[in-house]
Amino acid sequence: MQFEIIAAHDLDKQQQQQIAELCFAAFDEDPWSQYTFMQNAVHIIGILDDNIVSHALWTDRIFTLKDGITLKTAYIEYVTTDFKMRGKGLASKLLRYLTDVLTTLGYELTALQPEDETFYKKLDWISWWGDLYIKQDASTYLTDDYQIMLFPLSAQLKERLTHNLVDDTICADWREGELW
Ligand SMILES: CC(C)(COP(=O)(O)OP(=O)(O)OC[C@H]1O[C@@H](n2cnc3c(N)ncnc32)[C@H](O)[C@@H]1OP(=O)(O)O)[C@@H](O)C(=O)NCCC(=O)NCCS
Image (cartoon, rainbow, N blue to C red; front, side, top):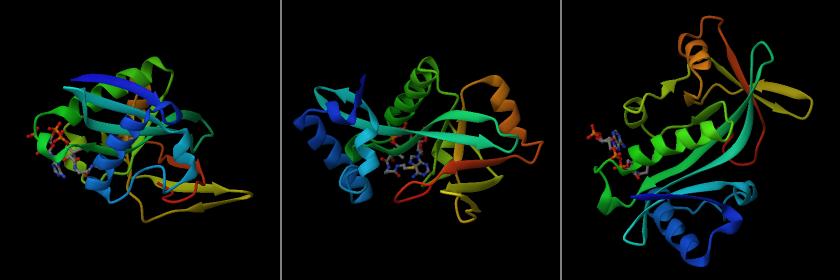
């Protein structure tokens, strides 16, 4: 499988169509017609025999920890493999490649809201048990119904977030649609 990383606005018509089909099959929606901020997403596609067989995208967020430290975060969504090609390790390869690329691009953290944690746990993602806050205009509020997973991109951050010894919290800016 070959990988390509493409900004949403640089996808050609065929790529858009193939990604839309994959996302409709898995999530009953494509990324772009839901939320305008997805126009700023960056896609990673896995290609076999000229077909997109596996996909994920990320959008940029800043996560702020309890002590005010800010983390350049890639928030990952729409992770899916063509249902005919599942169970062959494609999404695992794609996510491993993606976290490597994000490290070289200067990201400090990757995060997502999992449908099922098992798949990501096998890839060493960690579950976040601390509080999650959203900052909207002048107010900051707790969002207690969400579970996210994290893949810290440095050993130091991994140590801090895995053990959560300082009873950390994560705060991100409000966004339209799903907050997490
Ligand atoms: C989840 C998904 C992306 C995995 O793609 P894939 O290319 O088949 O993944 P891989 O082959 O790399 O890995 C599959 C592994 O995860 C496990 N797995 C896959 N989907 C799983 C699920 N929903 N729940 C639990 N485990 C799952 C498999 O058992 C397999 O484990 P193994 O390697 O020990 O056999 C794919 O099943 C999919 O598109 N699902 C629908 C969309 C979705 O739920 N996306 C995740 C959104 S957070």
